[in-house]
Structure formats: C-alpha cells, structure tokens
Image (cartoon, rainbow, N blue to C red):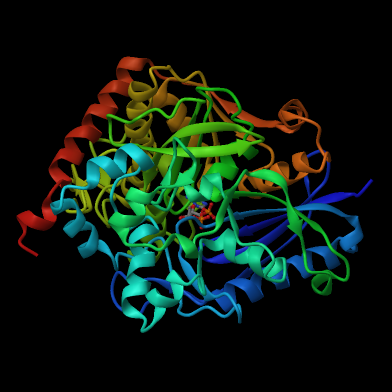
Length: 500
Ligand code: ADP
C-alpha cells in the first residue's frame, strides 16, 4: 500500500505541496513564492509559467524531503486560488496571456454595464453568485476581447480556458486532461449550480464559446494520471476543489450546519447546507462545496476582504507593531476596548454589505487612545465581521450554529479566538492540523483511491487543539457588537461622500 497522498495547494502568493499520511498529519512540505504582477492600479496578474514552475518545484522538493518516489504516492489532490483565469493554446500548451487574478478589478466596468442591462437576477438564480469582477466569467471575456484572434480560436476550440486547477491538471497530465471540478466551476459565473453544467444562457450573456470550457467532473475520482516523464512514474490525479471548499472538507464539516472560518489576509466562512442550494437573502453567495460520486453538497459563503490584513497594516502601514503576534499581548493589556472601533474597509466591504464605496474608519479616539487600543480594535474587527457573516448565514440557512471551527494564520492569536467565542456565544474550535486547505485536497484524492475508506475515517483524523468557550454574558457581547454596527454605518459610502 502506498504511503502518502500528495496535496497541491496553489495559492495567491505561493505554491505549496504537502504530503499527508493516513492519520491526516503532514509528512513533509515545501513552499515557493512567485511574483505578483500589477500592470496598473486594481489590476493583478500572474504568469502561468511561474505558477507551474513553482508548483512543480515544490512537488519535487516535498518528495525529496520525505525521501520518497512517485511509487510511494497513492494519489494527488489539487486545491487552488479560485476564480483566477488562464487561457492557453491547445496545441502548444502555451498561455496566451498572463492569468487574471481573482483580486483584479479590471472587469468592474463590464460588470456595471451588465447590471444596467438587468441580467443580475438570472445570474444570481443560476449561479448563486453576485455579479462581480471577482468571478471568472467577465475575466475570460476580457481576454477574448483584447487579444487579437483569440475569440475565433476559442470558438474553434483551439484556445482553452481553465482556472488554476484546470491548468495544473492539464500540465500534470501532459495535456491529456482538460477538466475542472464542480466546486471550482461554481465560481465562474458560467455554471448552473442546480444542473452542474455550463449554461447556454449564461454563456450568451458573457459571450463565452462553450468549446473552450473544460469538462466538469466531481471533486473525488481518478481523473487520469501524471505524465510519467514528470516524476519517473505515473501518479493518479484523483481530487480537486477550490481552496475554501477544500478547507471546509479538511475541517470535516460534513454535516449540514457545520461551518468553518479561515482567518488569513481576508476571512472566508463556509457553512455546509447539505443537498440544498440555499439562496441567500442576506448578502452571501451560494456555492458548490463538493461533489463526491453523484452527490452534491452545497454551501453558503461569506467573503470578508480585510481581516489579518488589518494587522499587517498596523505593522507595515503605520509601523505601530513589529510583528503580527505582538497584537495578542497588546490587546490583553486592556480590560475593554474603551469605545475604540476600527472598520478596515480598505477596499470597501464584502459580505454581507457588498459596499465598494465604504472606506476604513477608526472611531472613538481620545487622548487616552494608545497603540494597544488600535491593536485590539484590529483584532476585534475580525471577530465582528465574522459575526456579521454568521448572523447572515444563520438567517439564510435557518439553522443555529453549534460550534465554529477555525483555521488560518491569525488563529494562532489566542486573544482573538477567545474574543470570537465571547462575541458569538458559541464554542470556537481550533484543530491541531492548521493546513486544512491542503488536507482537504488530500482527503478528496485519497478517498478516490481507497487510501481512506469513508468520511468517518477523516472525521477521526480531526483532532482538537483547543476549544474556546464564551466567557462573557450575551448582553455584554451584544453591546460590543452594537458599537461595531454603529461604526460600520459611519464607514459606508465614504468614497462617494468625500467626492473621490
Ligand atoms: P494568507 O493565506 O491569506 O496569506 P495566512 O493564513 O498565512 O494568510 O495568515 C496571515 C495573516 O494573518 C496576515 O494578514 C497576518 O497579519 C495575520 N496574522 C498572522 N499571525 C497573527 C497573529 N498572531 N495575530 C494576528 N494576526 C496574525
């Protein structure tokens, strides 16, 4: 029996590979950053070749570190930065342009125009998404419209589209596989999440030829194998999911009502809603969590744009702290926030507000305000935004949350996680293995090849590091939260109020 499963975690700023054993613990890992390209303000690109070369290098490095060869790998699973859009030539395999990254606002004007044409309701109904430049649909159209000859070639099927997992699976299979998985497909604005197929009406709205689209497959099945030339021997390619969906799987959120929140640069909360695609009435998006066999699991998702990045700003923008962990000690020097709130709406507000004109705000300052207050307010802002999203989720899903599982870099901060439990009034659980994104991809691939038998095997691997329980009365939490809501109200629409 092979010894490990290899997870590819292709992120926004780095490519990583982690090898996992049967107990769900990492055996070895490797990580490589790659360049971010900013052609002009608000536009973000990646060179697909640097995505590929960094990913391949980390795969080889992780294998070397564990002293294993291809024959020791039971399967490969892929998870990826979502929505990022790549177009390449079917014959040569060469990208025809840089990838347009999920963060890029280059297609915002196109989205505004489509909104004026009144197509958003049908898009929302079929895709579960909001019409925003964040998703892939308008990014594909932009490339087809701006690169000479691209549209005609795409119509002939000579130019292919893929999000990052599709591109990697194409390259890994030596150009044999042009496939996506249901979770990644659900972020393109082109996939009908109820039929799990590309939708002709949506393709027409976005002006995308069907011939360039990958086949939509499940998240856990043997898709094919790696080109033997890459690692000396073929390895099964057997799992794929977008990063947030993979993290939800890695956190073993298998039952409806289970939710996880990842605290990184931003925060992404997903709640499993089972076989129902719950339509949000409260500013969330509906997405495919995963498809295993013929069974589709849906999720509600709330994306918060600025979370840990607020702490980064204290460090890099203001120079108030030397390192992010310092905020933990600073925050705990105060017994209350003393009325100081920080709304980090640097790029507007995401879920549940979707207010691109909101701007950052610090309020409640007095002569007594110190950097401890600002550090505390930055940490508190992550917890308040999480409560905003969670409140919306509970209202949409109609199920109360019993516990929240958390992961991501900022959850190393015990003060933050305790404050989160206080504010939500539910236990917050932090697992031992924080690499939940890669773990989710490994699980999906491992299930497909029988490395793990079923979900209960995975459930058993989930080991609690620490549970944080609420330590303040709920009315005290509500009072703190009311202050946040008042601060948010004052931050909204600022970009238009100040005429910039
Ligand atoms: P990403 O995957 O989005 O790059 P990570 O999961 O690596 O993010 O988390 C990094 C983010 O978490 C940074 O924005 C950083 O400011 C924040 N962060 C890291 N450690 C701490 C800490 N101890 N306390 C508060 N914030 C932290």
